[in-house]
Image (cartoon, rainbow, N blue to C red):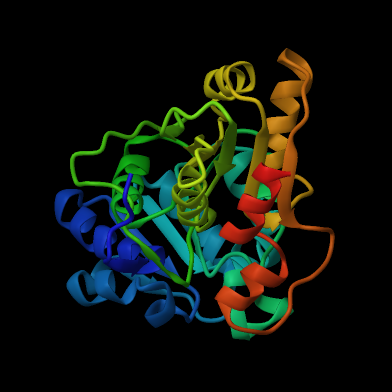
Length: 310
């Protein structure tokens, strides 16, 4: 699969899809915590001002209000940066949304170290871990414009909590408009047997770049795009473990509790074998450009290639 020249940040895709979804479903309401220009919910607000709620810098209140709206047969999309949604409002997500299994969609932008210059305090590296441990919560992390727009609309059809992780950094468009996705089913790119690269979110494009470079040296790998981390696609993990010589996971997230851990849990239970996990190694982030930080924390294509060859 060739990466397209077009680049779009998944937060932008989120805003555009949200506006279209609002036209299709009058039950959709959107809440934001004083960051609508950054999360791109301002696109929805301009179109549907009466269905948009600016909650100010009060993320816990935003989640509590979303829970209330859900009990009134609305479908709330609650948006802010990942560090504020998963972090500051965790208690409300746990007890006011997941425990009663309310129909709230938490859409968290600016996740991971690729927030860049905002620095360690704003680089949320543990949200996947936090969210996937919550009962009733579906956890998603999309990789490109096409997939994100599908996810934004698809989760409106699910009656229950969803955490959708989105990026600030622009990324290459990966998929064509006719690509089929299914919640809980990962996407396989290529059929190589030398290695499998499991990736999610922004690291999927890095995995595809590595795949292309490795092919020049007759090393054929497959890339697995986990747009859904919970429920995890056990079948594709086990197939790759049995069919390829090496397994590597890569994520813009802590290696503790994220995609690599979720895959390891499946392998431990079903088919014990080695998995090399690339991610942020039990440390906070740093301030710097997103591309340089990916290289510094060793989650870019160079590090993937290095680990496949080794």
